[in-house]
Amino acid sequence: MNDFSREINDRIIKLQHKIRESGLTGALLTERTNVYYFSGSGQQCHLYVPAEGKPLLMVKRTVAKAMIESPLENIVSLKSSKEIPQVLLNHDFKINGRIAMELDVLPANSYFFYKKVLESSEIVDVSCMVRDIRMIKSEFETSLIKESGIKHGEVFKYIGSAIKEGMSDRELAGAIEGYARKIGHLGYIRFRGFNVEFYFGHALVGAAGAASGPYDVMATVGAGSHPTFPQGVSGISIKRGDPIYIDYVGNYTGYLVDQSRTFALGKLPLIMEKAADVSMELQGMLQNSLKEGVNGRDLYDSSLKIVEKSGLKDYFMGYPKGVPFIGHGIGLEVNEWPVIAKGVDMELKSGMVLALEPKFVFPDMGVVGVENTYIVLKEGFEQLTKGEDTIRYA
Image (cartoon, rainbow, N blue to C red; front, side):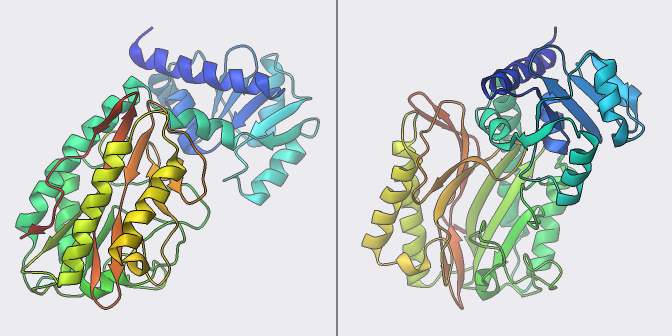
């Protein structure tokens, strides 16, 4: 058994333990990220994980490709989802019990379809179990996240040389994204949730970067260019004294890192320089506190005390109303567990990977702040994103 086979086997064992604890017959996974996580194949598949026994991967398209990608033993063709009950019976699996599916992302029409097809079973939610397992990263996973962090550091090292006075935010974004693709960025960022779309990230220039966004899960998104995708660049030109807040997600291995830096041509307004200093103070406090056993709620509350003392609370984590969090888990998706947020009791554990992003948004001026990705250790942390944190004057 090679390293990847052991990794998939360990994940299946953890899921089966939770399935048995919950008194379930099994879990039927359909969401692509979860199917990949537990099988190794990113194709359109159904993965059935029984409470006991070996899982079954049912492949809609190319079985031969799935057999190359996945170390699972039982891989079969599935012509139609209507055949799932019979395929399960053919492999001696029970279908008259409680079967769990990803109800946090499964469309309603699909739910009603599976409810009809699996008529002898009760369908319950597996989402929390899966997200809880994925929250703790293995050494295999962290090695891939570290690789993405190193590559993404090269992108942020490049950005300073790409910024030119008079160029548009769209031109800057194109330069950043083109460079990232050149060195191996996979070009896709997974974001879990209904009606939440995301691209590489955001190049937020001046006042347009401070535009209030459409999502309550993002502190900053930019003015955007069209109502169909109300975020990102708007065509504004870069001028001296503008903050240039670059917030990009790196995906070079399937596993993500989240990183932000503030750039500028010439000096920023004093209040923004102060906010940048407070962001660094917040980052220092978070780093000093970051270790196994710390409660994420306490990290958020401590951050808010520093912000209130600074007099910049009105601009913290968004404007006119900031989002009530300062960090989030990250892995195969941007917004994994845990979340470092107001009132959310969640004890940090070794192996969690977090993006911490203290930032300030000033109307009619722009955004300043910093973001890095960390892995939590028993005593302390390891920073996985690279490069100078303070304002870089290009």
